Image (cartoon, rainbow over all chains, first blue to last red; front, side, top):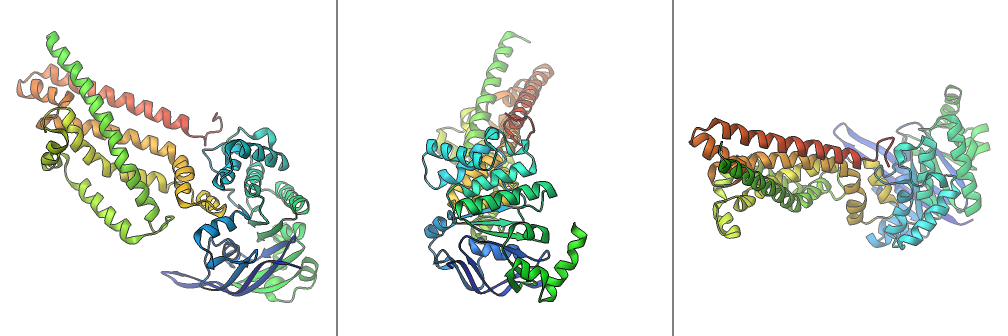
Length: 251
Length: 222
C-alpha cells in the first residue's frame, strides 16, 4: 500500500509565558492511499497540531513530514502552494467567507489556482450538486444551517480535486443527526473519488462510524494505532481505555 | 442675513464638501495600504514582522498625536510645494490628508484584524498566495467594517476642515470665523454650524446604511 502521508519523528513545542507544551513528541504515523483514518484524543492532546503539520499550517520543530512523495517543510513557497491545492481541509467552525455567496466560496480556490471564471462556476455548481446543495448557490453562509455550511466547506475543499481531505473536528459543532449525514457524505466521497481522508475527532462515535483505522493521541504522543475494531474492542494503552470509558457520557 | 451671505454659505458648503471628500479619499489611498501592512505584520498576522510593525506604528502614533492646527502650520512649506499656496480650500487638502491618513491606517488595521482567523486559515489551506488572501479574502470580509470606519474618518475630516478655516483654509469653518466670530454675527455662525451638523448627519446615516446593506452576515441578505 502506498504511504500518501508519512510523519516520522515529528516534534512540536509551543512556548508561552506559562512554559512549554509538548504539542507533539516523536510522532510517527503512516496514512495509506484511499483509507479513512481517524485521529482521536482528548482536547489539547495535539490532534489539531498533528493534522496542521500535514499541510504545513504548522511547522514542526524537527522530524519529517512527507506528503504525496514531497517533504513538506523543504518545499519552496510556490511548491507548497501547489501541494496545498492537493490537500483539501474542512474545519469545526466551517470557516466560510461570510461576505461571499455559496457559489463564490466554492469558486474561490479554483480562481486562486488560475481557473477561468466561467469554468470555475461550472465546476463549483457540479461540486455543490455532489454535496446536495445545488439549490443554495446564491445564498450567503449566514442563511444556511450548520450542516449546510459544512457541505459548502466540503465542496470548497474538493474544488481542486485533492488527493487528501483533512477534517479537523468537522462534525463537532453539529448535532448527532447532521453529524451522521456529514460523515456519510465523507464516506461516499472517499469511495467515489478514492480520496484519502484524515478525520480528527474527540468523539468515539465519529471514528466508529466513518473510519477504518484509528490513531490514539495523548499528551502529544501517538500511543496506539490499529483498525477501529482492534483498538475499540481491545485497547492496549491507558489513553485508549480512558477514551472508551468516556464514550458512555457523550452518547 | 443678506443674499450675499447666503451665497457665501453656499460656496462654503461646496468647499467643505469637496475638500472633505477629496481629503478622505486621498487619506484612504495612503492609509489603507498602511493599515494592511500594520494588520499583517502584527504578531498574529499573516507575515509577522516586528520591526516593520513597530516602526510604522511609532511613525503613525507621532503623526496622530500632533494636534491638527499645529500640524497644519508645520506642513505649510510642504503645502506650498504641492498646492502652490497655503491659503484657501484646495490647499487645505494637503494638511487634511496628512492628518487623516494615519488615522485611516489605524481604522483599517482594526477592521482587518476583526476578520475571523479561521477564514484566513481556510484560504491558506487551499494554497492561496499572501497577496490574494489580502485582496480576495481579508479586505472583502472586512468591507462592512471598513465602510463604517470610513464614515468616522470622513466626519473627523469635516471637523478638521472647519478648524482649518481658522488659519486660511476655506469652507464653512472660515465663514463661521470670518462673519460669525470676527464680525460678531451670531446668525451666520449658527447657520454655518447647522450646515456642518447636517452634513455630518447625512453622511453618518448614509454610510451606516451602506455598510449594513453590504454586510452579508444578515439573514435576509441579497
